[in-house]
Image: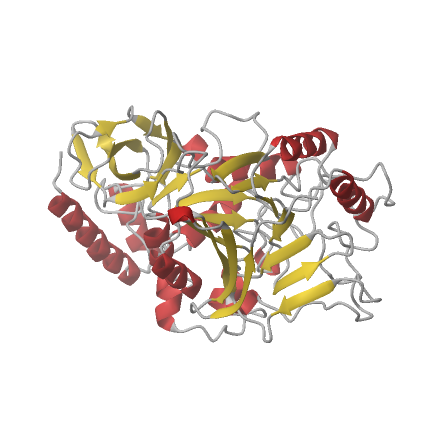
Length: 504
């Protein structure tokens, strides 16, 4: 096995190789190199340019993921991609940062049919324990390299009252960040374009226990003139996003949970209809391939699920694309985003939970307000309002006043309260270039022209950012839920603190 120093030397060699490639522009020169090695290099070196992910962490399990690549990154190849590399890999993990008494997963094959992604399920872990892990990878078991040390913390036991924190973000638009909304320049510094979105630096400084990505992780349909439709084009969107050093560093230290929305499913406001590429089945399959939600061979388990993350907090992740009715369908009892089976599951598990706070993580808003011209979500006048209102009525019949929604999709940060009592917190867009002013209650172009929705907070100016959430009842103190709206440079713009409601 190669030492970490050898791995570093390989990385340096890859950088030199990349510089050489940048100078070889002629067709003849490229032809010579392709004969030497058909995977864009002068040697058979294998890398993992996108780092590692620890997904769907529980008190006893986690999914670890990486992707073997033919170049070290973060610089893209001449086609603007991070090409994959066939090989093998396994994960070594331990409770000690020096990997004393470590365990290893089985060797996994990185193959083209899975985009060279390797994913392993770890079980029988200790609750509330920090684990260290690293990738062992290469062409074969006889000659492997060792990746950097990564880490994650398992969730505490269900009855734990230890402090827990997480961040939540959405709508990170690569094209707007790199090139601007009209392709005429984004104003982003060269350093940020090299390192990635500033929000990840701000979140890293907070050291959250986990991160929630609630949809629009990539944008298949941006820029519009080169919208991704084929399998290689769709995968390329994930590769270019995940190779940023700030993302690699953040996710190397932070567990994750993921949901999809329209742009990382098919295209803007996509439903299950039509034959426009990518097809719905393709969008569903690629998200499962790229994101560690279920084991690699699981194509059947629904992506909606719930996790008890603290004695006082339980999270529900709802699926907003796989079961929805056509957007253009007339609203009424038969029109649904969730589908009958998911809705029954959501209501049943909410009733069964004794958590103090119940948060529904929804890729699209349920309260808003939103633009009056859309038909895509639960707030829209010609959208799915009947389903939302009937759910709010059910919530009140059962006196579940400790439920709230955290939503993505809307590109502005807000805290809103529906007349039925549901509170909603929107995380906004992760990057400045994708942020907008948003819709406000009482405005004629909104879904709430009469101003029935209360809005204690909407950010004063468009900015990238995220939610930072903490729940704490340690040292015998009364439980408290703290929700902060943070901009992409770490400045707290607004804070909401919750204490348990008295039972009625």
